[in-house]
Image (cartoon, rainbow, N blue to C red; front, side, top):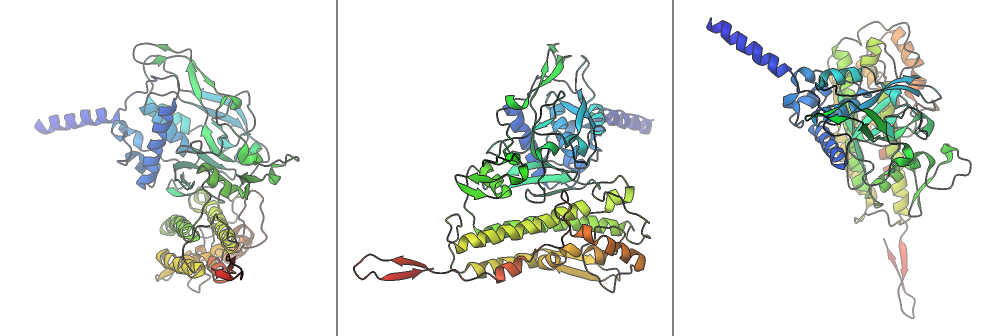
Length: 525
C-alpha cells in the first residue's frame, strides 16, 4: 500500500511538473526594457556554450527553465532558432507575439517570397497553452520566411526590418540572414564592433562565430543581411483583470521605425546607377569595405586596429568553426555514413535539401562559410599590412618588428588550434590550423566519403573505391565555391595567411627633417 501511495504521489508530482504556466499577455507591445531584457536573455544563452536548443533551454543561463514543464524537448534548425527564442521570451514575460506563417516561394530563387498570411497569439480569456502555440509556430517558419524584400512594405508586413548600422541598432537578438538558407542570431556586440552570433544546423547542434564575409552579400530584394524584429502592437484588446483578451495585431511600417535604414544594401556614397553591386561605404571620409564598415559603424567610429590582436582574434574564431566542423564530420563517421555505398545521385541543391542523410550529415553550407571566413581573413590582414606599410594612423602597433610578431602569433595559435581525427586504419591524425588552411578547398562536404577526404587528405588509408572517388572529382567545382549566391567556381582562392606574413616587405623608414640651419635628417622606423 505504501509503495502504491508513493507511486501515486510521484505520478501526480510528475504531471504537475509537466504542466507549463499559461501564456497570458499583460502588455500590448514590447517596450525598450523588453527589448533589453530579450537581448540579455540571448546573450546569456550565447555565452553559456550550450550546444543545442534543448541544452540551451535547460542551461542554468536560462532563468525561466523551471517553469517549462515538458516543453524543453524541442530541436530546431537555424531558421527556427530566432523564432523559438523570441516566442519563448514573450511567453515567459507576458508579451504579445505574431509571426508570418505563410509565404509564396521557396528557400531559393531570383525573386523575393511574397507573404500571404500571418498568425498572432491571442488570448481568449483562459490563457494560452504556451508550448502548443510555440510548436505550432515552429511548424510554420523556415528559411524562406526570411526571404522577403527589405525595401518594401507589403500588404502583410514582414517579421523583420532592415536596421541602421549604428551602435544599439545591431544588438543581441538581431538576426542575420544568408540567402543561401542560413540564419544566425546575434548574442553579443563588443566595443570594437565585432558581432558574435550563434546558429543552429540541420543536425540541431548550435555553434558560434563572428559576423563577416561568411554571410555573403545579395540584393535587398532577397532580404539578405542584418534584421531586427518589427515593432508590433496588440490593438483593441480588453483587460479582464489578469490579461489582455482579444484584439488584433498592427505593425510599424518601415518609415515609422526610428532606425530603419537600407544602408547595408545601398551604401553611404552616391550611386547614380542604383545598382547595389556598385554600393560603396565610407566613415568620416575613409573608404571602407562593407564588413569593415559594419564593424566601424556599429562601434561608433572605432577605426584603430592592432594587426597582431586582430590576427589572434580571427584565428580563435576560425578555430572554433573548424572544431564545429569536426563534430559534424565525426558524427557522420560514428553513424556509419562514410562506410555506406555512395548513392547514385546527390541533391540538385546541395546547400538545402530535405534528403535525410544528406541534410543531417553533409556540410557544403558550413564549409562554404568556413572558406569565406579564411578568404576574408587573408584579405583583411593584407589590407592592415598595407595600411601599416603606408603609416596609416588607423594601425595601432607599438612594437619594432610587426612581421616577426605576426609570424610568432600565427605559429603559436596554429599549433594551439589542432584537429585530431581517427583515420580509416585507426591511427590518430593531428592537423594544425595551417595544415587545415592548406587543405581547405580539398575538404569533402560529402558524408559518404572517408574521413581522410573529409579533411582534404587523399591518403592511402582511405578505403574509398573508384565510385566514391569519381564523386569526389565531380564535386570539385562545388568545393571551390566561396560565394554560393554567384556560384563562382574559378578555383581555390588564396588563404595562405602565413605566406602573406612571410612575404611582408620591409617598411621604408620615415624621414624626419629636424629644425636647424643644417637641415639634418633623422630616419625613424
